[in-house]
Length: 369
Image 1 (spheres, one colour):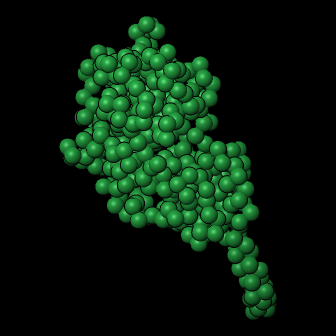
Image 2 (cartoon, one colour):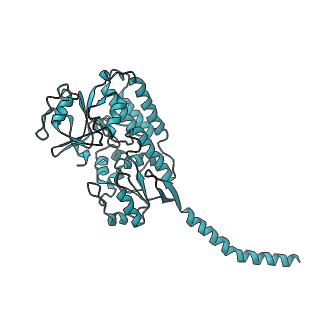
Image 3 (tube, one colour):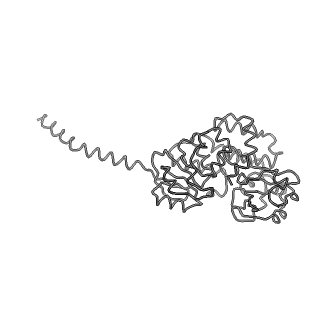
């Protein structure tokens, strides 16, 4: 009787084993993909394991990813604009292989050659929500693609950077290797607010953001771009705040009327402060402007990436801007030491004096134009 029962059980196991095996295989196939919601509020299926990443139209994201992951080994493609920053940044000192990442699948603008991108065999593509046509192209090609937004947080560079870190964690199913960097950014933001909150408008200098200056065209930050948030958060008044656009073009007559007391040059303009002081670019005459007369023209630094847009050095950028605008309120801040401490804490990098100099004095080639 017992022998008969055992035989029956054996037969049952033999019959059911293939069913059990097939069921397990189906579960593995299902679990090979995960669903996330990107910044365009779209559900996207991404591989559970991601080893090959291409980044296109959101140029700061490559540096943010390197901070997040601690290396660049999974990046197989980035934009030429991202590469221009990397080649002239501290990022290449920390991760030398970053300069070998492929950029040939894109033009210097935002055009992507889909055939060349496919040849990179990406597991996922990261692109900007400002280019929805990209998402459609990748969907048609069967490539998982995740949209990251530069404008979801209304120009707040700290919140934008933190939002990118959060989405990277969801997509890659990993934790941030630079633990504490998001909370540190909020701490810096609050510290600066507490120091400038009692300033009257008369105590806030009028400032002009020179976002881009090439081929005779001058672009600034209107009220809808990061420059507005930077100046608001650092205790200055954006002279172009009445222009409800991102980066509108303006002429010298308008700048003369505004007569800004300070000028800040972004890293997207191949222009240095001396170019403005010496009127050495084009035929424009900057000499009548108060900021030029008083030698208050400043170039945004460049560390791991350009300091104007949200990026991995964003907390430092806000602190630098506030201490430059209001040195009397930040006289206790040693900016050199703040940068060194930040790089040691979050990148495990001991900055040399030469590297610190390069951060403050970026090459005009870093503009990538």
